[in-house]
Length: 309
Length: 220
Ligand SMILES: Nc1ncnc2c1ncn2[C@@H]1O[C@H](COP(=O)(O)OP(=O)(O)O)[C@@H](O)[C@H]1O
Ligand SMILES: [Mg+2]
Image 1 (cartoon, rainbow over the protein chains, first blue to last red):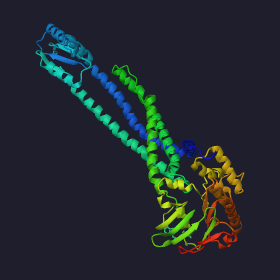
Image 2: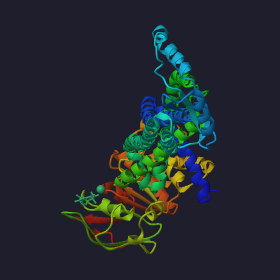
Image 3: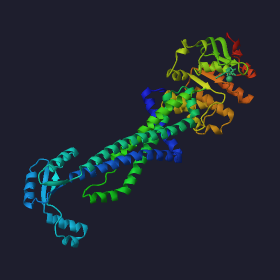
Image 4: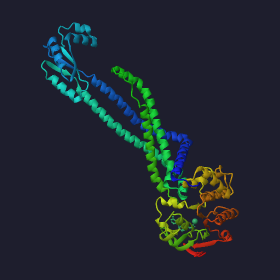
């Protein structure tokens, strides 16, 4: 009877503080909704960037594996020599497949592509050389591709190597920069969420100043006074994170059909990568954590000021 | 039980208490009186650790309260029941929840809370009103809820600062009667009031302050 072990009553009060603060949020539906929405928007932005980058990386990775060199040979290199070169090159470990292309086939294909077949038919001399189409090993890095390109240029009979490894290096750098940007935006937006929630918690303290003062006067500790505030922060933050996840899901639902068509055009059999259930849970948890942190720090500052008189 | 030893309290420009020495025994009921500004509230504020003495010592149960700091202040206050002039009820919750607050702080089981809250409301004559909001009560009834909240956790010491300040004479006598009843069951009661006519009728020691100095009621 009477007072019970501290842990049991502590758990009791947690349960009560949790449900009371939830009820208070529900009692102010418009205000709570707007706060959660603001937090949701803040958290959605980095989540969208992150998921977008996941997709870019997948596409970039696939383009890299489908990379190929075109070796334009000197005009006097015959098709037979080209075929010999192809067979020899194929023995290299960093090359997967080499195909010799007849200059006549190349011209025909060119004519077809540009749609000037008649004009091309009238050409006396085929301006195109014989060429080799070369597929490098799929696991090569950008710098290994560069090395390979250098080696190919040095071969006798090779006029020009057509392969821009630079754009891949640029893409890689762009992805790395974007990842940093996403991280930076993420940190800023989580900070923004903490501030939005902090302001809400501060208003909550303002509204409950009398309650907090009375609690302190009749022997309640800071922990007792703070508990409902922490739960209010946790609930608004989690709800905000969940709102953010829903916003992102809606956005991706809107974006994924054209994105998947784009994948198709690249010959990629891939689905658009959204947040997924784990991502949504993580976003909700990040929101909840931001809420806790902000409630904790706001309560620390403002409860000190609420000294009873 | 409560021992003021040469206590002074100086605010920026004035002395609220000057060299006050007085002892209050366990189970005693005392009145603290004097004109407005005499230092009554200051004495109670020092006792509740809402402020600290500028000099002198305040002993409670033999312990110097100057040593009580930080988280232990809350624990210390739980030994007191406190009644305010403006009752300080919370209007965002029922009468029941107002009275239950000290029990929740002390960590009572919900079942015991219900029992004790009803017992406390019964003592102040408000049983059956627990689900109402205190805003619908009259001033006298609100003060009685305030008293129920102060006594619900069965504190050893009951402290009241001008508990009848906002009430008419009839209600004031009723409220003082309640304090007297708690004193008779063994609670130490300290009531600050400037209403000499009212407190003279209850025959308890009257400690009189004037401009921060004790001028009467030192010995019992
Ligand atoms: N926080 C404070 N700051 C400055 N002066 C104060 C403060 N509290 C009380 N005083 C002064 O101390 C004196 C005693 O005040 P108080 O104890 O409230 O008197 P009483 O309760 O007897 O009316 C008064 O002159 C009052 O103005
Ligand atoms: Mg006063």
